[in-house]
Amino acid sequence: MAKQQIKIISWNVNGLRAAMKKNFLQIVKDLDADILLLQETKLQEDQRTDEMINIASYQSFWAFSTIKKGYSGVAAYSRIKPSEVKTGIGIAGYDDEGRILELDFNDFLVFNIYFPNGQMSEERLQYKLNFYQEFFAYADNLRKAGRSLIIAGDFNTAHNEIDLRHPKANENRSGFLKIEREVLDDLVQREYVDTFRYFYPETVKYSWWSQRFNARKTNAGWRIDYCFVTRDLIDRGWIKEPFILNDVFGSDHCPVGLLLEY
Image (cartoon, rainbow, N blue to C red; front, side, top):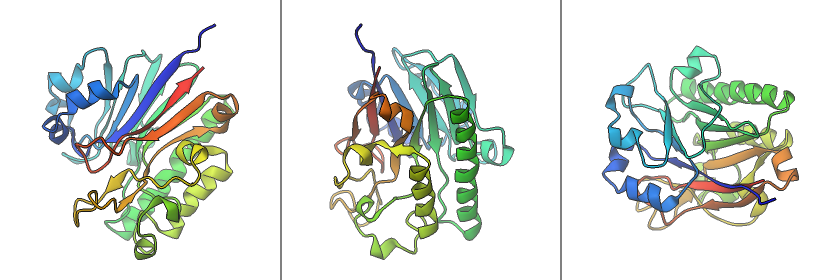
């Protein structure tokens, strides 16, 4: 029996309206994803255009910030119809920022997550840490119920020194703090697998670059965009060819993804 192959791509677009002016629709066509997950759309529901909502061959699904305009937001485009789509995890303090989409494809669940940035203040750093804790408690309950998970998005943390160009200079900056990195250590110990690093343990590749100091031109980047999966998907051999598409522009992040084959 022929196997089904699904290409899943995650991309922080740093504002979908801005991305639309940077050849977004052609990029989507070229990416040819079966499931495309966007973070930081920065849209309210009534700000979407028909062009954004109705991309040929895709259904679209959205989560919006209800507390602040031009902020956060995630979207998913899928050629495969999910059996169910949820926004949030049932905790208003996190759901209100429009950071979570959950798509159920029966054999597996796909999460599109825009994890918070902790650089603004100590309060926001704590919010970020709490968000990690609450989301992965939610994910653990799904695992216990026998579900297989793909968790993709902007995690806003570089895990190890290999994951950013200047680790020493950034060790006291949110995004590479020890307390944030320990969260990712814990996820790995709990058998959530960083697919890119699992397949390519020594490959230096980044997914985000500051918009200052010619960072992208000099490749002074960070790898903060991930596709984590539950260990069972690795053990079954369903995960193939994780990738980071450094040659795709249009945002300060580039797309990341994997092939799912089963």
